[in-house]
Structures are given as C-alpha cells and as structure tokens.
Image (cartoon, rainbow, N blue to C red; front, side, top):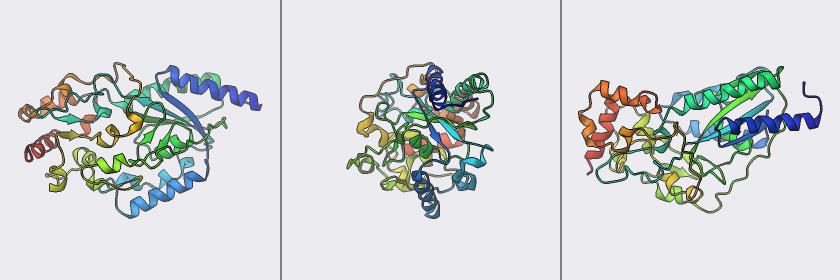
Length: 319
C-alpha cells in the first residue's frame, strides 16, 4: 500500500528509474484523466477523422481511443516510456544514394513492438513485487490509445508540427510504450511545445502532407503510401516525389533542428539489418520467400512482398 505523499513520490521515482534501467531512453508518469490538454487533443483527433485525413486507416476511428479508462478498469496513472531507435549505423542514412533505396530509421532494426513489450513486461514483474495491489496493462502502438497526447502529458516531450513527439534531449527518434496502472502515482509536469516559429518540417515535405501545423493528411504522406496503402499502384503525385523511399519516410524528422545532435542508442535491437544497408533495385528479383525471410522479426513485414515490388517500381518510374 502507498499511504503517504512521500511514499507515492518515492515509488513513482523508482518506477521511472526502473524503466530507464530496462533500456528505455525516457520515462514519465501522467495522472488519469489528465489535464485539459487531453480534451484538446481528443477534439483535434475528432477533426482529423472528420476530415478523412486518416485515409484507409479505419482503426483510428475506435471510440475507445478517446477514453483511456476503458482499457483498464480502475485506471489512475500512466507510465509513458520512449525507446530511442537512432543508431550510429542508420543516422547518416547511408542508403541515401542515387543507387540505393531508403527505409525509415524506425523500422531498420528489430520489431519495436516486441522490444518495448518485452521491456514493459519486466517492469510489470517489478510492479507485482513492489506495488502488489496495483494492476497494470501494457499498450504498444496497436492499442486504441491517444499515445502522443499521453506521452506529452507525462512530460516525455511535445507534439511537433510534423505530429511526431519531440524530446528536448532525444529529438523525435524514439517509439512509445505505455503501462496503464490502477495506482495513483506522482505525475510529471506536461511538456510545453518548443517548436516556436520553426516550420522546416512543413516546408521540406515534398508532397505537402503537413497541411497545417500538427495536421498530417495521410493520403499525401510518403510513409502512408509505402507502408499502409494496399492499392496496386501509388498515386502519381506521391510517385514523383518518392526519391528512393520504399518504406516510410524520414524527411520531416531529418530537417527538424531538435534532431541535429541527439545521443545514439547503439543496442543490438536498433542495429540495421544487413540487407537494409544496401537495398537497391536488384531486390526486384527477390521472390516472396526471400522477402519473408528478410522481413522476419522486423516491423517491415507489414509491407507485403508485392508492395515492396510496387514501391521499388514506383521509384524507377521517376529516375
């Protein structure tokens, strides 16, 4: 039992330290239902959906996303964590040559869903010992949770104009994980936005997918079309701006001033797969089995072999 303010403060500090010791880059705690900014973020989600900016990503419409308490009965706090995927081997984007094809940094190593889940599971075992009367639920990406809003609420960073979460020290090169808890813990201060007047992400997006600050129109986004689009062809407007991208796109993060000098996280989980380092048009000759073997254990398996071939061919159309 946590009875006093001091005990609450101490166990909250220990929990965040435990997250860092498990390999997370940043950690923070938010109270449920959160501050008024959560309402603003929920309203922003409603506007985004009503404008059909989510394109074919129908799962974004889940009503449960708007109410964290539906995910765990008696939810009182959220532990938010960030796992940095920036690695010295992918930072320079060595595949940024005329010959090679480009893949987003977030998916060059191990599947971050599994990496984060495994680490959070260890924290869960720790909670069972340290706070035995606390129930918990892990959420990684696929859960209907307003993730970036809760990470901002927990002080991990702020939602930038490119809609990515940005940390003062670690930029935006990290993926998020959450634990919803039934224990009232000491919340961190929500992060303030530090984008200021900068609009480099908006200016540099070749397809103008950032239609206004903080708003991405998915059907104009290179990452959306290379990963989520299930059509047999890629729209001409996107095709002519691919410039080598076949899985994801890092442009709006590469130009962000907060990403200029961030610490690497050189773990085995982040190390780019060998085949990714030199991916080029020769991959068009790979059969489905070769693709499936290469994609095993990565988030890239979401892109089916026929989609890879479609994406590569789309790049060749404008070379």
